[in-house]
Length: 205
Image 1 (cartoon, rainbow, N blue to C red):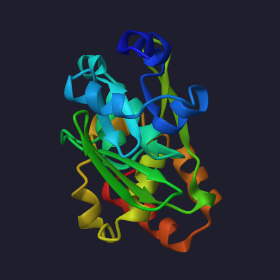
Image 2: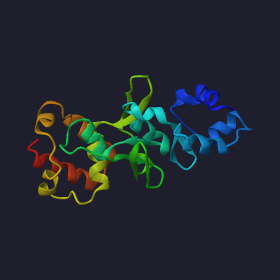
Image 3: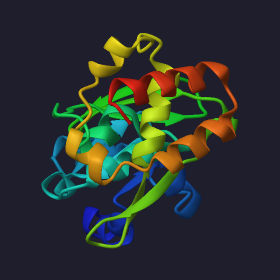
Image 4: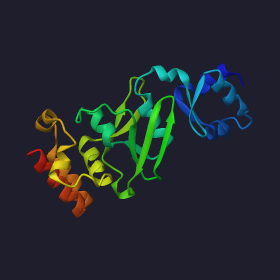
């Protein structure tokens, strides 16, 4: 199989695993991947997973690949809060949550980290659609906050909640307190309930 043939067959997927390729083309010679990688045609995302290098020039594909590198997962935590403009910091690493084990990957598309949450907490996300119709999953703003409070024990006082520096304009105009409290009730955790109350107190909500 030539690279042009391979490109035409797989490019629309954006990324692919060697297992996917062998399932369709059992005789595929995986040494081709090494040659194409050396030629700069493809990029290794992690062991067994590759993406076409021309996607490096297209926006949002790092977020799209985040959902492929570790599944199931959705983007949350600081990355989601930055995406919505809720925190002032620009976030370089794409942070996601998953029901799989904690892991981290680094490749030409960026840095990807995944933190583990319990399956019963794996909800509160929605699809974000890219220009070409592909989708990736992103936590709602309120669920990103919940995930942050759940995974980062250092946020335990009013002062520490203020260190998050949540955007005041977002709080006044877009923050959905009813949704947040619905999430808290669904989780039913005294610790999360206490932390959310501290958060609300910290920002006068």
